[in-house]
Amino acid sequence: MFGFFLELIFRSIKLDKKLYKEVKTYSEVSIYFAAIIMVLDGVAGAIATNNFYKTSLSLSALTAILTWFFWAVLIFTIGAKIFPEKDTKVTFKKILIAVGIAHAPGLLRFIALTPDLVMPIIFLTQFWIFASLIISTKEVLNFRSNIKAFGIVFLSFLILAILSVSFVMSRLNSLPISNIT
Image 1 (cartoon, rainbow, N blue to C red):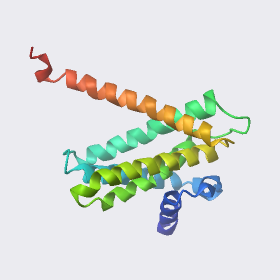
Image 2 (image 1 turned 180 degrees about the horizontal axis):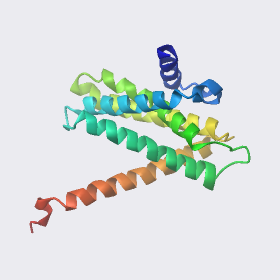
Image 3 (image 1 turned 90 degrees about the horizontal axis):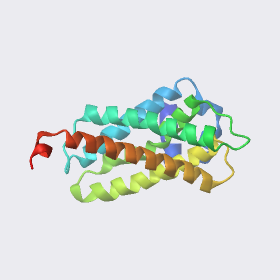
Image 4 (image 1 turned 45 degrees about the horizontal axis):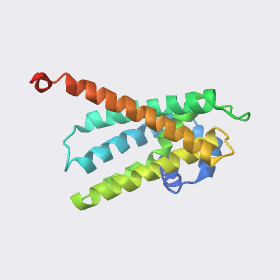
């Protein structure tokens, strides 16, 4: 069981596109493995950025789970419902698992041990996650074009970023200091 979990992580990090076509990738236990990857990804990010921004590990883990769900909803809605190809037949659960596994490169943030390494590693792993998401989206949705998969992931990212910034800004406006004129 643990061997299969590690296999999912290493194959995702290697950007193995065959990973997302194999039936065993979507077994019953895979949803739990994807959730563990997302929680660890959130914790790794929190630990890496703790030199610059103090955050709670539990809040980071919760945020990672919520982000995972919204990524999957957006990719499913945009890729499978709005812009599908004729071969696109996929369940939401399959997208959820693929998005979770595609975040495995984020686990490399655990190696950002010194402040000098934090930003380069976060930057590198974020692009690596994007590449993994594009591969998983292309394979799971049976797209012929990498450009279309990139478009789905990028549009999902933009929507998620706008919603995140809007949420943060609404919270900042409710702070007592924002009422000082």
